[in-house]
Length: 240
Image (cartoon, rainbow, N blue to C red):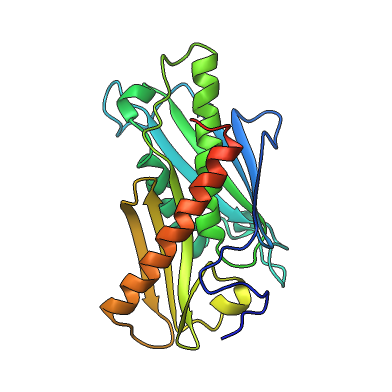
């Protein structure tokens, strides 16, 4: 099939990461994946939640979409006095993914909260939040080292996320909304820089799918994640 934007089946949308986008956050970036734009800000607090073991730190995330991030205005979560189920599920995914990148003992008794706010959504907002959220997290850790609060960065490895799906029986990488909205199968993949999986979310939206098809989608995501890691490294100047 021919994609609307002319991309090959295994091609990412254009990706741009602008670091230090917000003045006051310890780490921040704007990540743009095609027409999807997510602002990621990492904030450091000198305390940890009660469930965290003594001497260990914590990394968590929050996720939301601005009312006009999509084609029609949505209500703010605050107006409903609780997170939407979708936002709650996504922010748990982002938090789990970013915690996988950090040695909590080396972080010490600090909490880093990564806020991911979708300014404009055109598919792949959760995976863009993971990819951009990692950059914001790494920048915050870099500042902690620079300020003498940590001896070394607690980051263990890069983490990226990307989607793939089956549209018209064709496996495609990095779905935009017009593809995602009619996908027969949708899969989100979070990976480390060594190609290990952190999380897979695969759903048969229009039909069931085979293990072979799942593996094909994961291979596409592995290619995309490797390319995204190169973009992260460039944004971070080559290191954590």
